[in-house]
Image 1 (tube, rainbow, N blue to C red):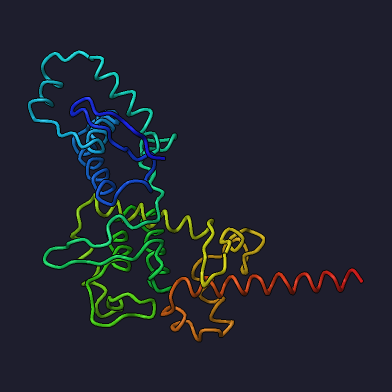
Image 2: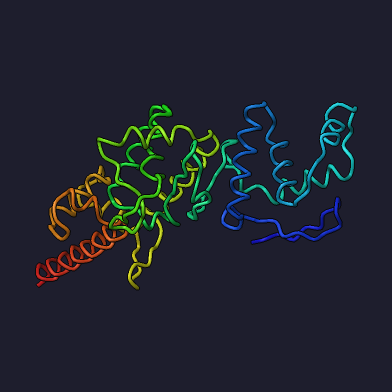
Length: 296
């Protein structure tokens, strides 16, 4: 819910976001840029919050103002106390309660296009709805490797499956980007590696938020609601507890609805999820029939 604040610096009334999803893409990008700057310069979480608050309020601090606060024997004033209270009240959603890490939870892409050297890389739409299943599967695998290894090469590979230059032909999911294969993978990964650290972190956090939603939220595909949490609940996984995206690939390919494994990878992610949902419902119906027949 947006918060209404009167800015003492300008006398204007401003609407301040109360969640990540209420921020504009530009504001989200600026938060991540400020966060990296504060980490690099050893700034406190409080200073990060203050800088974010000034940004959201549209207040530009002068260099003189910052130096006065830092070096001139500055004592907290009533204005400062109000700023600290506003940070605590309105910006709590930025961090998790357990750590000083950002908690980004919006599935809207805050950086649909990003520059890498002399080229522009184009990312997926909201909630990855124009990714192929193969792009999604490979990006997920690379991100999981990054979480284990903390090697930037793994994160660069993840980004390469999400962000690429425009091409003249749309894939089956509708995106105008070239496929990633053994011949061009290094080129795409090298382009991803040129992104600034805060931009990589933003892609990682956004993709993670999408992954979380795709395993727990509700989607509407072709007018039908799909409860993804039921698909990934422990008792309903077709292959048991270890069921993952690679298992899903094999599972859908076995049904032969879309064709072999390579063909499934070419299909839109949401089409594969829709097929998985229909398979789930069919499996549940069969279980009910078997249960009813045993009861009689």
